[in-house]
Image (cartoon, rainbow, N blue to C red; front, side, top):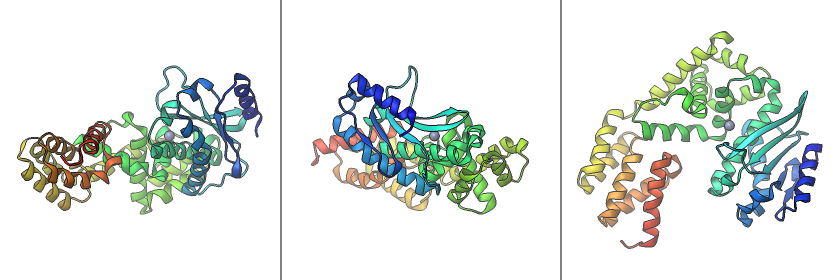
Amino acid sequence: MGNTSALILAAALALGAATQTESRSAGSRWIGAVDPQAAEEVRREVIESMPHRVDRAAAAASNMCGVAWGTIQWSVELRRPPLGARGAAACVTDRGGSIAAHRVIVFPSLLARDADEIDETLRHELIHVLHREAAGSGAERAPTWIQEGIVVTLTGEGPVLLARALASSLGAKPSAASDPHLEGFLRVLGAAERLQKSASVLAREWIRSQTPTALAAASFGVAEADLEAASQEASRRAWARAASAGREEAAILRDLCESAPVDEALTRLVRYRSEHPNSWYWTVPAVALAERCLASAAAAPLRRLQDLLEEKRNYLPDDARARWERVRRSLAVAPNR
Ligand SMILES: [Zn+2]
């Protein structure tokens, strides 16, 4: 145990954290409820599952990026977010000249979410830790899009982010500043295509490099000074390619699902989906159609939509996902409607 962790643990014990749990199998660390107030906000069984979750996420993160944990000092801690902090988990690096220990801070709001989301977030943050360890200060100096692009490519979050953005945008690319994760993924995709490599192979090369920025520039075939412009252009092209699948028909489909007779809209939606297997534009209209089916007690079309939407649930944009969850809850209450 590193000195910092020992201090935190001592402080937590002094504060009387009732739900303290700790795991140190195979080098992984869950320093449970560092902040007793934070622990109170989280269900006990979630806290009890954390040592196991952290172990599993640590093994998965190491596999995904091909970097071993070795002697890296790290911990995952439950704390209340600093005032104004958004998001579920943050990755902090302690340093005294060089990296001394890594800490992933988990906020109570994360532990209130789905089990899948907790695991996904832990993997994500732990890959940042491995990257910072492998690339040293090179990781910190790399632009945000490189840091996030590497991580979401390796965790598989990238395709999900892309699908969500496509489904909600009808083809208009979100601004690069609005989400460095999506932007990073698109730029990694662009570089991978230029090199004719898989994106995850490329991300693994970048993650192990002490000069990720220079390596990224080389991947785009430009000098480091030109990296930003070249990667922006690659991102734009990667988006345009993904966005072109069935864009024109998508607007028609949206109108149909919102106003045409349910059976006609469903037929068109199913046909659209089989004709455009790589398009995500059908998912949000499908949610609108499901809401109409529920309102008019159209049970058979609703079952059909449920089959289509259930496997894409995690790929729905946030607002559409919330609407679909409401439909599902109504179905659970009145299954024979
Ligand atoms: Zn991140």
